[in-house]
Image (cartoon, rainbow over all chains, first blue to last red; front, side, top):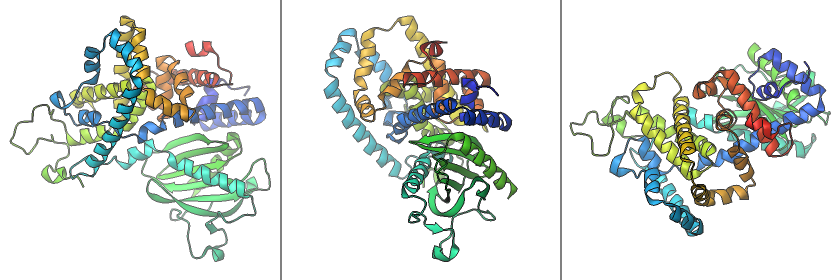
Length: 284
Length: 200
């Protein structure tokens, strides 16, 4: 394949291509440093976009929207668009520009008050129903921040510092602690990639225990790689690239399990490791 | 544990079921499950709408309108299909209608200034996080590209799911998304995008 089109490259980064085409694009990226930089830049832009809107998910939902969702209409809900249209002529619009600061302060107070009201409503008997876990998890990829942060610490610690490995590869020095791996699950073998298993740690994803496995290598350009294994009730998801700073990730869901491969190496390399992991997991 | 399950064991029945009293004024009967689904998806709808409109207030207006429309069309929602996709489609449809109406009205610049002013708190936060440029770059994209970008890149829908929401073929989503991503990359610095890409 010559240089892939922007459409193809982006579809590859979004995990939307079939295996064969993905391999071709990955190979093109591996051959062409400029294309690799472009892929990296596109991934960074996508990550910035997600981060930019992430805060909205954590804001308290205004009471008027909760009321609207419950079917409370009429006198109970002020219809803001109509109210604004009725109130606002050109003169008022100009005045509001000057008055924006005190209004902003009032809005901030309302937000705080609304947030408290929301919390009270959530905790009240018969109050709001918590979000179903599927939807919470679908909207929340914070666990990727967690694993990327830990991976970064591992990189900074260096290959000889094992303080960050909670449960070492050697079971005798593990203090009886066990990894939270699914039953009949075998540790992935990444020796063909020059990656040696060092141990792991337990974390929580979707409220369930999960495992982050650490692999190190002498090849500094590839750096250490970590693999995350979790259980999930969410539907299958094609491999999806993510980036946190200089940490690249590919994560996917398959048959009730959620996985991620994390590293500072380029996405093409991670993609190939993902292929190997997927093959090993399927063989289990 | 919600108390209403004891009073109303059938989650699909109306909230007023089991009561001989007529619905209270201003309370539209709606099935508990439908309403719960709607409440659960509100944060994602707000995020989607915020990206479409570029304004916190307008976004919430849009979501409120979408909730009201959804409740009047509850019977049109097909069980077994994705509720979130259905709601995204409603939000997008209302937003497109609003854009068309605004184009017809040729909205006054003062109104635009008012929208920016009313979002000042949010904008200050964005600026502090050095993320305002992302929002501004997004606002410069054509509506259909913005929609594709928000559905796939921000909300994580697959191309197929996004195509169902936008009611276009998967290939169209693919090309819109590529143009949007390249244009956004160019606006945020670097990349092979150009102004022409965004306007194509």
